[in-house]
Length: 396
Ligand code: SAH
Ligand code: SF4
Image 1 (tube, rainbow, N blue to C red):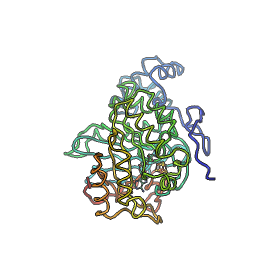
Image 2 (image 1 turned 180 degrees about the horizontal axis):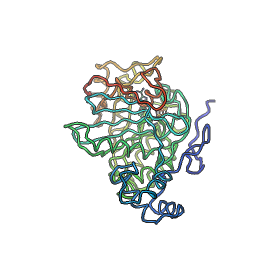
Image 3 (image 1 turned 45 degrees about the horizontal axis):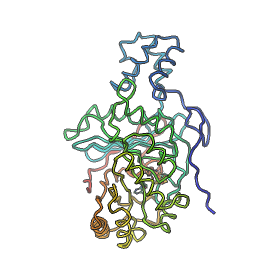
């Protein structure tokens, strides 16, 4: 029998480690709520209100350089920044395309693990796609991240800092056609967010709490994408947060889903959909059903019809994703006519469905592909490698 990856119940501390080398992640103010930050500042022998000032620089002004924190005395600000704003993410590779409105960064973490995040600017919103784990233990065979296994969970602040960093980039302006404010976050980078539940939820709380405690984003603008860990979906529903849930289904039948999404061997299609509908009922939020179309694997008309039957009348939206083939994979994206027919059949069942924008493909846009493809131009040490792709239109 296949051994399934377990839900991470690692109570481990704030380290975020738990798998692999357990080197503690440096403490960062985003790991703590405001009360915790006040406590930490007092323990450093500083006035408690400095916690609010420091937090306002980081979350409110998107500033992390102590030299710019002129309301804090110079000696105190260097010490506070060293203790509570350590550098967690070092960019090792930056790629951009679509005229700079799609940007991807590969980060090195303090222990050498690598993760990536992508910023996407649209006319009406700016979205960042973040990683929740270094690697992933879920083993989906079409996914680049899944091929390397799980390295470790990210800490709360390692997740939050990806967002805050890109909020700063968005504020500098991504171009004339994009708002200068980051508005949306999707947990669709590396890792299974619900397998790092506590830290992901803490990160979400930081993101939705107004400054100085957090970034003040709308709950509805945060999407948690999951492979379908049923107990964790139920737990998420009970949090009474209005987050958007995306369920990576990829097959409407257990035979195929057992293969494409190995965790299906534990929680079957019927069970995972039931938990999605409970989530929708409890939160009032439409669930996004993710379906990567793989040529001759899951793109048959009968599977489109079955998917339509399973979802008809439910609070769901199908997102068809053209497969982004991973290097060396035997699988490919479905041809466009097959994709169109699949979409037509799902819609004919009365289910809302769209084909996902495939932005950023030429910069290894799919989750985990940049970290997996280490053959791109990359400079040693801290130097940054910047590569620009030629603009490619989104296929929405
Ligand atoms: N682990 C979570 C979130 C990260 S993956 C999950 O699986 O939902 C984010 C999305 O990218 C998922 O829907 C996943 O199935 C999809 N994905 C992974 N590899 C892909 C690939 N090669 N092509 C297209 N989509 C892919
Ligand atoms: Fe993990 Fe999601 Fe990739 Fe599956 S698709 S291996 S759950 S990151």
